[in-house]
Image (cartoon, rainbow, N blue to C red; front, side, top):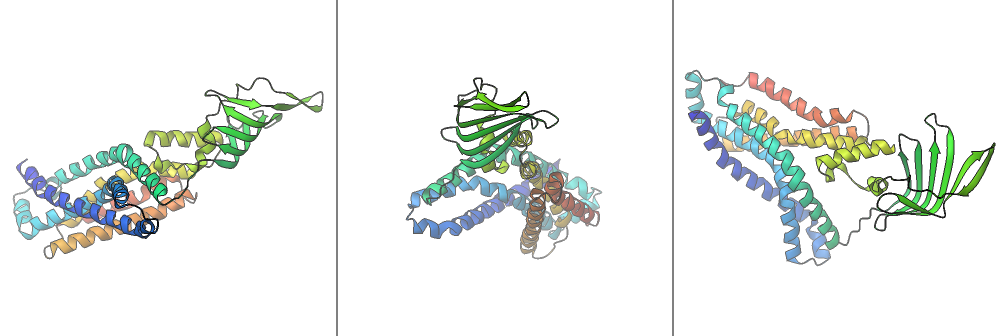
Length: 354
């Protein structure tokens, strides 16, 4: 316990300094990437600083794994350069036991990262993006045109010419009802449908159905059976990565039920969990690298941390892109980089100095 407290005491000051540095760096990168746009539209300095403030939680989310990796690698390397690790190993304490407190810290930060992303990062990042679009005069609409939605396991098919998300109105609505075998039952046509809060009220609706071998049309009176939520008709403009985990799961379920493409949303949903585990992953890597640097510890720890982070994020980007395009399963795309680096960390740990 004394050694655990000593290691944690050495670790946290370096971690605080590292995450402060990386957060500042990421914030400056985002600021300078959009600075010319702000200057072009003469955005006040106060508004620019407000955008930067809302971007800080996202910067913390990005910087957390890199900071943990750097702090742990530097702490262990510094102890090794002062021969303190040699003394610890000589006393019969295994390296894995001495580093166990760092693994617990990584696990704790993984749980923190998931809830922090869910409750803080996503809301503030959305505010930041909305504010940026307003300041830079960029419009974003949730209105959709030429929408096709499947409901009730494909028994109902909605075809909409245009959906007004503000007024919650469907224009140019056609509803095809078919049996479970795919046999045509009826067709409903309405120029307009308004959401009442519980169902769609169709205006001047006609229903076409087979009667005595002829396709006949008659006015449709009862429209309360059409109760698909308005969000269903604007899911195409939403991203699972912009929603909390629970809402992202509901979004995936809605897309499946509506017969819409859901692979990208499912991959983003799995990525929410795999990215949170990166904090635990980097601790395994840092422990395996910690006893390898005896000279130039600061430079070697920083360069190795940045190198591992670049490789991890590039691999993650490629695997997620392949998962979103359907080349590999979403679960594999989200978790492959994590599994790969865990394997590398375990192999390096076996050859670590003890």
